[in-house]
Amino acid sequence: MKLEQAKKDHYRKLAKAEGYRSRAAFKLKQLDSKYHLFGRGSVVIDVGCAPGGWLEVASEVVGDRGLVIGVDLAKVKPIGRKNVKILVQDITSPSFPSLIRDALGKGKADCVLADLSPKLSGIWDMDHFRQIELCNKVVDLLPEILTEGGSSVMKAFHGSELDRLVRRLRQSFEQVDVSKPEASRKESSEVYLVSQGFNGRVVPSSQSESPQEVRPSESLEGSSESDLLDDRLP
Image (cartoon, rainbow, N blue to C red):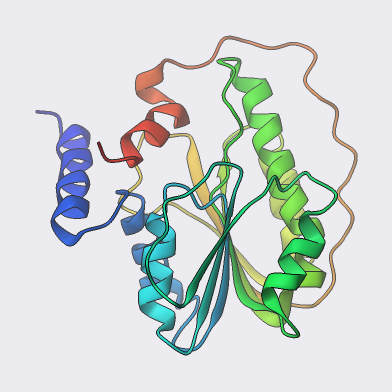
């Protein structure tokens, strides 16, 4: 068995053994261990929360005095914990900002997580562009939902628009790292943008053009689609 295949199987088995819905739970565990993103009593928003692995990890960390709000277009099976709220909503919907504000109440979140992916078309440049646009939608909302000094973690796909997104985040946060946790496969095109020290404002995104010339997607074995399928336990 190849090393990367063995690592993938290791985290799948570990997720089952520890009762997590997704092997992606260990990506967040590793990122939080390194960056200390949130703690007891924190308020966390998880955008693109299905199937719920990140919700489980975050709810454990924030404890009974904290709150985790999960949002996804797909219906997510309830976590069964009082500190977790799950909303079914499309982040591109005009009603999304008000729905999040209602769920937060008077305060704002200490951390915003975004493990987002569009419905993959198999045309890699287009999939990359759409995924980065989803990230930008979340960035647009940060002044309304993230407290000053707060943190954010976003999954992003490698491609021509990644640097543009990173530059935008670096004007809104004191520190932005491009990180790849051990639980991610080495050959995967996904990275995680870890941003800390939110300054309360967002720089408007520069105009991007949808790719006109597209190439076929990478093979399933080496693509982010493979990771998406691997993350969901049977």
